[in-house]
Image (tube, rainbow, N blue to C red):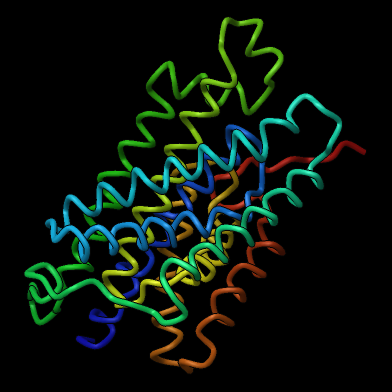
Length: 295
């Protein structure tokens, strides 16, 4: 039982980073209707910038974390304004947006490889990395605790922001019908810029926390998070913050428990087996709306 509880906590910690990433992914889809395949690179760049700041300027990790998040957010805005904004209002269709996101994905991936190098790096040892907390025989590391706390704070804040504020309502209105939102006095471009910054910044936060927990900061860091984040959004329901959180946690728990009790080689297979199951049983996701076709 102790082993199961320990792995359950480990799974929640891993799932917390997936959930954070998925929250940003979900924000983009809710406001722009874009499946942004470059989103994983925002996580990579958040971790890369934070590591560069820590090692070159010798500043505290907490400040480097903020710098990494802001840098990822700004990269997200640049990608949106130079990549997606010119296509809005044109008959480019979703295929044009996906191709554009793939282009920026490859560009940012190669730039990350040039800056960070081919090998995975790690954050310097700190009090946070070496600290551990124990409760009833369950051990939680400092990075794991930070990931779980960050998910609680960011997830709750974003859910309240999207459901209880006028700006959150404006984001949902722009995602539902951009033209109608303009008639209601909303400036879609302003809304989209802020959303792009928030979504990419949250992905950057997930990347920094993942790099800290796994000692793996590289240009490839966000690639796995992109797949797991997409799966989390599908399982939870597209465009729903609650769904992104629950979906990410489920995937993290199933991934870790599957590796422990089935096979570590089937870690990804367990994740996408869960995704496949939801696509069959409930394709709209846990919190998604079920649409019934009329005969």
